[in-house]
Length: 278
Ligand code: ZN
View 1 (cartoon, rainbow, N blue to C red):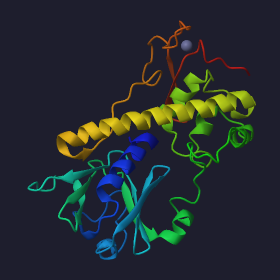
View 2 (view 1 turned 60 degrees about the vertical axis):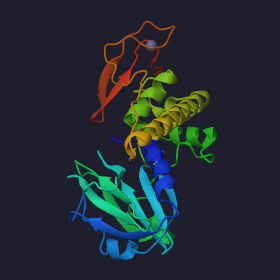
View 3 (view 1 turned 180 degrees about the vertical axis):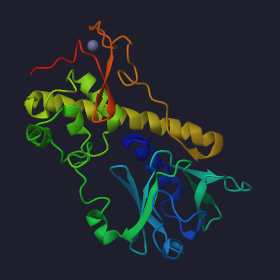
């Protein structure tokens, strides 16, 4: 499933191939993805120019010069790729964007958990999709002090707190496991028990991991596009995620990675270097 770094990578790729270009038409090959397509989607996008593309949490926001914003969520398996000149759209290419310069960009989604909406830009942040979203983890205005303040009010495990999109968005299961391991914090520790220093280290770790993943994604994306013009995800290398029963990667630690379930999601951690304080 694409998480924040992948969506950021896709967004940066889209800026290169879509921003500043005019849409001739949007061809829909079905009536819905996870939800029905918004009414008059083609009519409202036809003839408009995509003037700006940005990411909010795991949403891609494509602002057009008509005042509408095209919102795309990639779900579990959504991908956006450029069709070569002669190629017919593939089986899972559910949406094909025809650009004025003749290029065709396809939204491909085999599992169809993705979705799209079309909303006035002026009210996009009050929409059902975005209105309850918390801080962007990479945003400057999320200071260590504010982050500590958020955690100190949460009387529940730090792992589940970090996954709460109303506080901080887009960290995702993998990156939360990685950040907790890097900060030596036990995933079951209550968020409100963390010290200010721990909160600061945790925020720094999360940012470092996200930035690294975005950087890796960016370079992979470039290489990948040289081959077949696709915008793809990158292969991750993880320190703790999906390493159950493996040796802890921390040099000074001889612990073994354990897997537990928290709120129905797998958590991977090292019981030796991620100790509970309470
Ligand atoms: Zn360890």
